[in-house]
Length: 206
Image 1 (cartoon, helix red, strand yellow):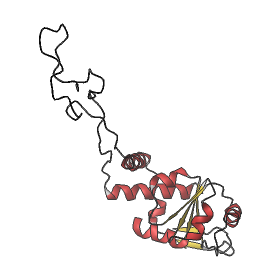
Image 2 (cartoon, helix red, strand yellow):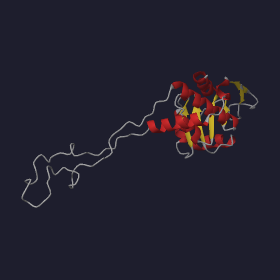
Image 3 (cartoon, one colour):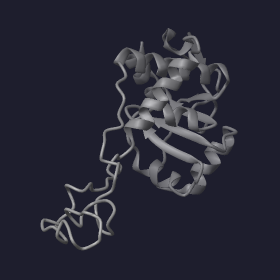
Image 4 (tube, one colour):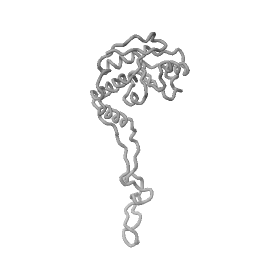
């Protein structure tokens, strides 16, 4: 299939097209996309919060008072959950939230997302993005020329000038073709991708 290039400062007339495989024409699979997005977000959770139970709290080795004759209830340690400073009953523990997703499933979900973005006109392919110096105003003007306000810029390789220029634009993010993920793709109104980057993505997903 072919995708038409958008007009920017370096792409010329905008009548050119780029040939892509059927990876950008896949059917929309909402259930698969949902599963992959949930798994991706779950894998980003730290899972480091944790509370100590009665066996993990320091101290409390001695019996606080004798078993009988005090009129108080029996107690074996001050680290019992009923005491202040004691362990926590059923407290949360550190855990791994990651979910397993097969590689074929992940790639199929990415194909489905990119194909749907293409069908909705939210995938904008440009010839190239190049900046001689970091200048937020210049990048904002280029995006304005593409009729883009909120966008994910996908580059073939890291570009420090573009990354610095986009840093002060609150609704613009910059990644290279190896760093795209399902959550980022669906989080932005438009996805602006260079020809070099879209070909690399095509090679991986086909």
